[in-house]
Length: 280
Ligand SMILES: [Zn+2]
Image 1 (cartoon, rainbow, N blue to C red):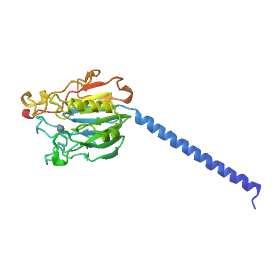
Image 2: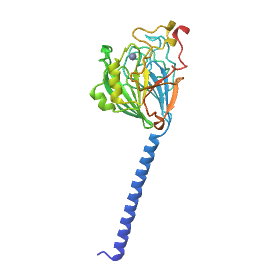
Image 3: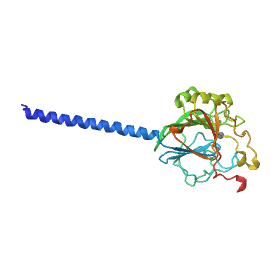
Image 4: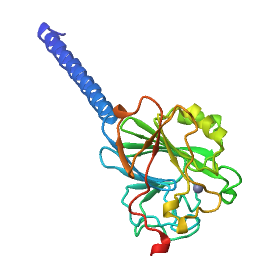
């Protein structure tokens, strides 16, 4: 038999339970909202090393280095030694992108940081790294099956993609990457990696607000100012409505809120830490 007092107590218990549930859900929503707002904020630092290599620093100080090159192989200058980073992100095993690791050369670190060199999605503190399968341009890279990973880096609400030495865009890449805010893409006058028409296809598909040209000859760093075979100095932007923004240094900070409204072509200076091989 249940008396009136028990009913009141039971109702009270149920009431407290549902109140706890509500408070719990409000807390979960609030925490997620705070995390979401937080992840959309903050300044990201982009630093150009040289060739196709960049260092990206998140608002919380997480650092990745993309595509370090081997010193003085083909391109005639050095990679800065022991550049700090939490991880290396590698597009493919060519020596001008993997620090010479595949060739068995000494990496430019005493203790090489953790490396991401396989397709997949990885969380590295406040950065998400998404490696999408692509294919190396032209006939290069047959020794490793022409594998080239296009990396999408999501940080502080920004979507940054690095093409490595990828050839023409495919539907798979188009669908996996979507649109981006910043695109790091090969852009030398010789069209060594991407032909102009192929580069335009990437721009039309990914619609970056900012294009960062890379993988071109940097004459002032080359021995006797001579470009290595097949590589010419930086190309002009391919679309007429793109504003050239000379950064005037090797580093810039950017946030989702400070993205330009119209498309820009950011030209960096190479890292001041690089030394020319013939000066050593
Ligand atoms: Zn390359």
